Image (cartoon, rainbow, N blue to C red; front, side):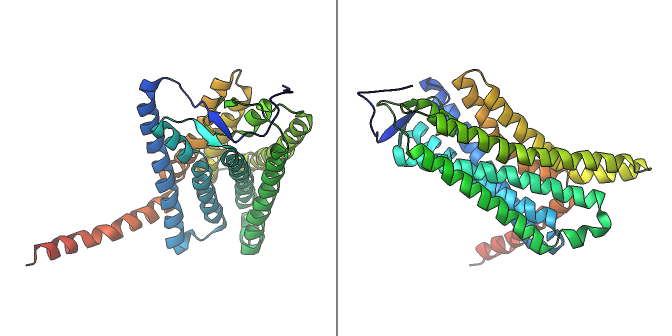
Length: 319
């Protein structure tokens, strides 16, 4: 799309959101506020539970802590602005705010993607090389994997954001989405977007396809290794250690795929809700409901404040 007379730097965009129906806005606000609060508190509980229990200071839970942190940041980069717009009945987002959303959403989505691949590698080593697990997955390597994931995500985010800054946009730009999504922004530009499209697709192949290939390879080896276990109980125990991660991976990649296969902008926006809000919200439930260690740590955290309730009530009764 090109503009001649209207080709200029604009100061703000309009986020059209999920629906223009005014009667649905309170429902949308309440629903997304609830999901955001559950996401933040659920993932904070996971981080607190793992941090407070020395038995959970292992590579698997170290990566899970980072994943919970990234999920909080990812939703916080998108949902608060959406809630403010719904509450104030305003669709405006500044140019700076839009670029910031692109930068941070791309950063945390990419980091999330890399962490899922790192966690798949961790499960691969634990199941396929159990005797060498502690030697291979040492603290230095774990820290390095997280650091490299972060650096690659930051570099990709900065590259995409800086390239969007070079684009020009027509006046009265409306974004058919509830946040400034990279692909939607490139489509709305008035200037030539060939280079942006090329870089975006190459980055998607390398930085999304690469980790996905790593995950698929890891699980092919895991399935092969589990298949060689003779006892049914042994197979179940081995599979149960990676069932939660496999559920999260399936949910994340299926929803992301749904976004890019959607035929319309509205359908894409609705599908984006899944990987930006629903998946981060469900992660704590997936990892805690199927994990006895996390359950035990969470019960210990909840039990400590409850111990002080009778004391507080007794003190209130004292004259």
